[in-house]
Amino acid sequence: MSMIPEGHLLIVIDLVYTAPADRIEPHRAAHMAFIKQCLDEGFILVSGPKVPRTGGTIIAIAKDVEAARARMAQDPFVTENLVDLTYTPFDPGTRHPALP
Image (cartoon, rainbow, N blue to C red; front, side, top):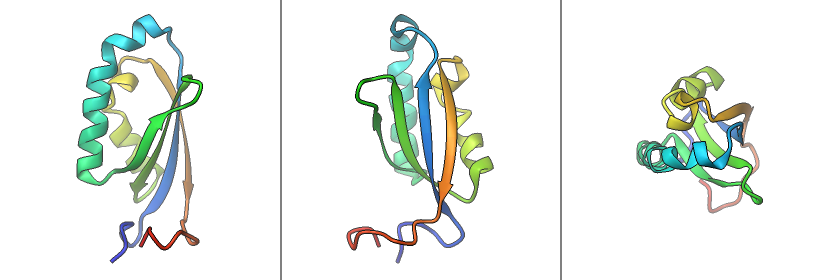
């Protein structure tokens, strides 16, 4: 059984901070709770901060970009207008054997 359901894509979601750190930090705990919920629900495969920390990257599993946008609209970083997001969908046709 594949970890990527039939009819779904992987979507790279690139987050770029648009606010200074002093505006972002008060919302980090809520953002991380959102990330954990998305991991638990199977929407996020992996995520983490960029190096250097100018934002973050999420690899999501969704039927399409619109579904990913709708889910990410609930992220506190998005609702507080702290980040810009870009979405790049791709079909993971070639993958490491550890990723069924």
